Length: 198
Image (tube, rainbow, N blue to C red; front, top):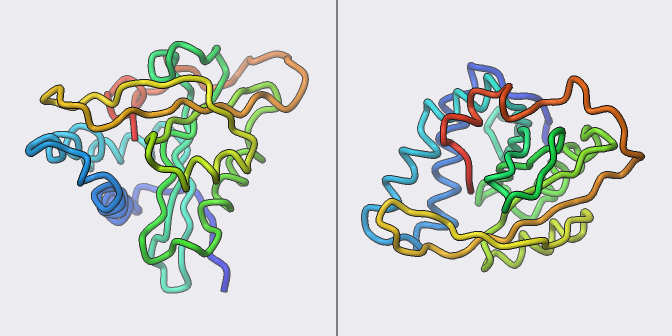
């Protein structure tokens, strides 16, 4: 059966945090210097960070028949400093799109992106960043209308480079209009908490 897609709730904290950390480690651990991976997990993917996502952002889950989490997308207001200074007020960010190793190749990532874009305001650009060597993810994003607009250094605790990230954007799909009531960086506690990036 197809996965169930639903928004995360506080009860999802533990499995969501475990999935986020496991997926990050499987994908990126080999790019980190000793000590930097542990520092990153604590700074960006701790239980406290994930609780902030659930409270302040939108986290869309893909859930299997057995209730196991297969993947998730985290959507928030796009901070200019997180995307090379490019976003405008009212733009949004696909902060994370993670799919578990066991669930890849089933179209879950594509379904999550499609859901995110369908819910995006028509006048909002949608930003994301992606590891420069993650060519599969770049192709997936390109198929959904994202194009590369910049590059940024992925910062680590030691300062040793763990690989650059590309900044990608899907431009607004409708006429520019009022952005009243849209999420902004001032309105989200998690966006101030330092739990952003990869």
